[in-house]
Image (tube, rainbow over all chains, first blue to last red; front, side, top):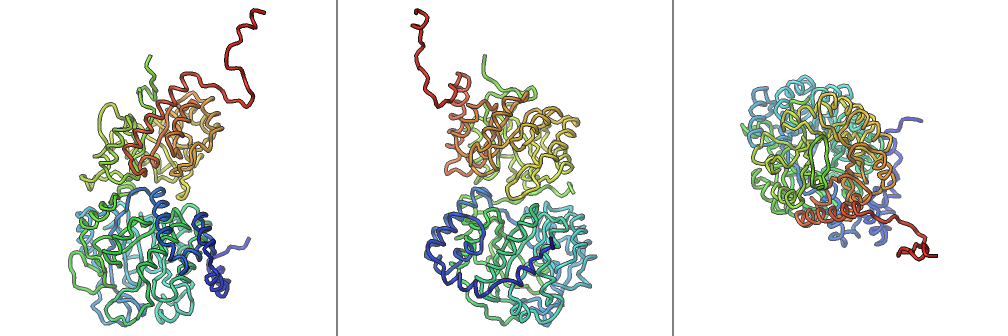
Length: 372
Length: 258
């Protein structure tokens, strides 16, 4: 049998049929999706359809109940650490974009250690390392050096960096990285080309096939997502869900997560994202949960405290807290942010808001670092 | 004679074992443990957090000689990882009891029979009291018994599913054949499922989701305790066998007089 990649599936996607299905969603389709709790194009489209918004309370209750049963009454917390804002890509929506005249900073090992110790003292055990894409100064050599700082200190270290080769993922995995996040931003090729005019990131296929390289390398966890606001969020989310379904079937040993980042204001960014309401965010989250009962769902500080508090108990499993989105953000505070966060509360305040919903904020859910 | 269950020389008056995941707070978990009357709680070693001592799950597990702490290897994907984790858990908790669970499948958390048998053999040799979580596979349970596990823990249905004893017929074969205690683990969704497990002769059950995710976990723990006592009492009292044909309910002594 010929090896199928998601790229092949995406190439054959019938856009007209999608619009037709979305247009034809009936109340019966919505109820069927709620009952089946399984991914199919039809079920997912039904749940994200404008018509399903009338049933939002029903969707959310179902989503909450599936989440509690599968994940329990807990929310896992993590903190991002920005290692560098150097970037050779031009991404029209991002504050780190190459042509954006901001002070650039790549943290030294000593600076990394300071950030790491700061978060460790706060009680974080799960961290996410984030960078722009500057292959020369922030490539594998830099990552391996950085991991020397983080791996011994934290229970889990996830990475959200430029797409790498499978051999690189193997090396990172051997060094103790178990989780890679790589968001496609948009699955619509024409839009992707428009917002990524220059740099390595303009290679759509290399990014699209990245999760497969991550899984092949033996990583335990892979995170997917689209940047909401670049194109039609329904269509992009459906394609992301298809990607997820494809990966889950092919890589039965890997855990997957999804996040719903929306375009946020950032320095030098003049893009006007299409509107994505809080209600639509809640509906999208419920649709994912109902179609993928064991999917991890992350809600970041891009969202406001109000909406985070409102929806955290309805499907979310992971939340970032007290995030700074620029290198040295926790201990220095000079370089500019990738985007402006919206939830500025302290870790303790966020923990308290989780407890108020009857949930347990969980700081550690993986083995202490000395194991690996 | 009091009805006690003995595993590896340790006596248990309660046949209800508790999992500690998914609770809304350490305090609720602690109260549920107390209400259940359990003498064995299992805790995922990956939740043990010595960095945040105030919030460490171990702080909420009442420590007494009457309560066995059973660390589990949840998260391990193969025998090698499970053995390594068991050794670390023993060092961290001081308990040489280990619930061996190896599930490379993160979706349904199905136990890997090959790796489990391999790890069990190594751990027994290293002096652990091994309680392996397995599919309700009678042959695998015998093989585990042969390598020296202290009990076997076949599943009733997938973890967290609350589906009850979907493997009933196979559990009955395991119970019939086993020379070590049989603990039904996973899938127990309601007190009636736990009672049923007792009625068919299981030695104990392990419950987590059905209690932790209940609206009132403490009351639910108490409900499980009662149901299990009833189920066990029924078992010991000689349950009538099920049959679809009618049978006379009074003794027919007059037949002797004919």
